[in-house]
Length: 223
Image 1: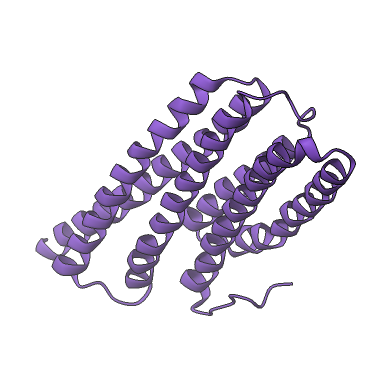
Image 2: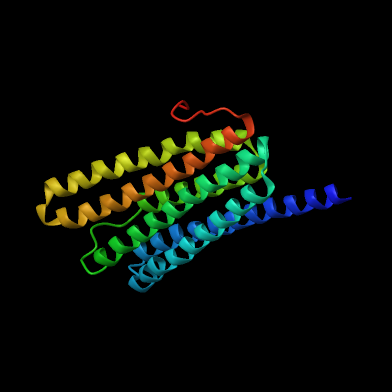
């Protein structure tokens, strides 16, 4: 009976970590959406709220880190449970960095909103939607131990990379054609690079899921 009680407590602790990671993931997804809405709608107030919201992400990171370390110290897990907890510690770092990238986007949005619009934003929202989907699916794969979904996330990173390259080419055309657009184009380019990094962090999570389930490190090997 004591062993069963111990096992149930341990399962509850692991579930708490999973749930907190999903909450954190949902919040960074909201930050991506809000940052893009602030750009498209030229909503400086929303951009500022997105920057402030990053503090909630940082708080969750510390809470999850603390919980993982407590479980490691008290339960001394082995095998797959140990991989789950150690990878949760890494995943929370990627999620926190996604929050940072969203805050960085929002800062550039505030600057762009004080200047004439460079162009209608079409590809950046598409890029943000693709990156956000990657974040969600990477976390879903983590919770379910779904290797196939994790592989899909890794492959979808190419979609974001392609959009980033397309935006870079378009911005270069703007700058060559009209030097007065250079400052604004550089800020838009910065936003594009932030979205590319968000997708990279989602890919990191997906690669760690594959390691968690299969015990195989496939970083830098998926085409």
